[in-house]
Length: 249
Ligand code: 13P
Image 1 (cartoon, rainbow, N blue to C red):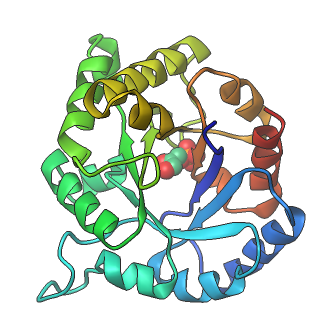
Image 2 (cartoon, rainbow, N blue to C red):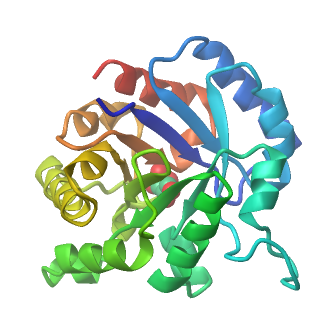
C-alpha cells in the first residue's frame, strides 16, 4: 500500500504572516492518515519546519541546485534545504522548466543531489496544450520520465507528479480518463525501468487546478496517490478540504 500524499506548493507566495495557515492546518489535522506536505518559499522553510515540529505536517522546498556548495550566487543546495528542515523538494516544475530553461538532464542532476542529501524528490512531468492536441502527451511524459529520474530512485526517495501545464492555475482539469491514462502509463514506465517492486511503490500525484470540490473524483482514479496543489494550498481551509477527500479514499 502506498501512503497517500497531499502536497501544497506555495510557489512565490507567502511571508511570515502566512505561517498562521500552517498552524491552522496542523490543528485541523492533528492525527492525519495521509502524509501532508507544504512547500513554502525558501525564506520560510526554517521557521515553518520549526513551527510544524511534532505535527503531521511536513515541509519541503520548491527547487535546489545540483551542487552541494560553491560559487553559485543566489542558489540553494539540497544540503542547505535539508539543514533548514526540509524533508522533500519539488524538482522540474513546469514553471522552472519554462522560467529557468531547466531541461530533463538538469532536473536529473538536481534529483541526484537531493536524494544524496536525503530529501524525498517530487519530480514533475506534464505536457503543454499544444502537445496534448497533437496527441503527443505520452511521448512527452515518457521522455521526461526517462530523462529526469535518476537511477538511484526508490519508492522512498521518489514521488512523481503529473501536472499538465494547461491545467495549472487555469481551473481546467483533464477528464478522469485522461488522468488515469497518464498515471497508468507512468506506473508502467516505472515498473519497466525499476522493476515491479520499486515501480509499484513510487507515489504518483496529480497536479493542476485541484480544489476541494473536484479532489474526491480525482483521488478515485487508479494510480492517483495524492495531489500537488498550488492555489488551493495557500489557505488552510481550502487545503483541508483536499486532505479530507484524500483521507476518505
Ligand atoms: P494550481 O493548483 O494552482 O493549479 O497549481 C498546480 C501546481 O502547479 C502545483 O505545483
